[in-house]
Amino acid sequence: MFEAENIRDWRGQDVVDYDGRKIGTLESIYFDTLTDRPAFATVTVGLPTRRRLVFVPVEKATVGPGYVKVTYDKSLVKDAPGIDPDGELAAEEEGAVFEHYKLPYEQGSRGERRLGRR
Image 1: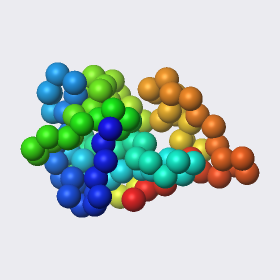
Image 2: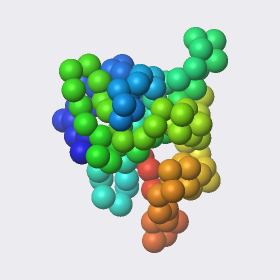
Image 3: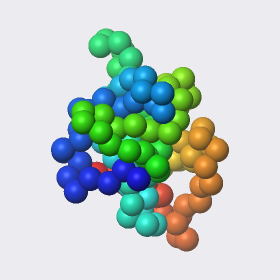
């Protein structure tokens, strides 16, 4: 499981798939507001003039010297829902992120957001 005391220690590190292929660089972590545990990472992908941030689950992710390894294939991650580098995930788009990875999704009991950025 990916755990870091300080996300700044991992920001800018490579994110690789289970075969070690580089997907992009770690930008931020979104925490599950129900459990306060890391849930998704945003990864910078694309050409310098067309960059975007895509979401990838960090459950069962591992860290090594200079990288975070996720358990998902590079092509699946690159096709994931994303946001502009300066954007925020809209509440109504949270479900699509979970759906892309076939993960269960439900809002909080009062309709609260499920993901919070740190």
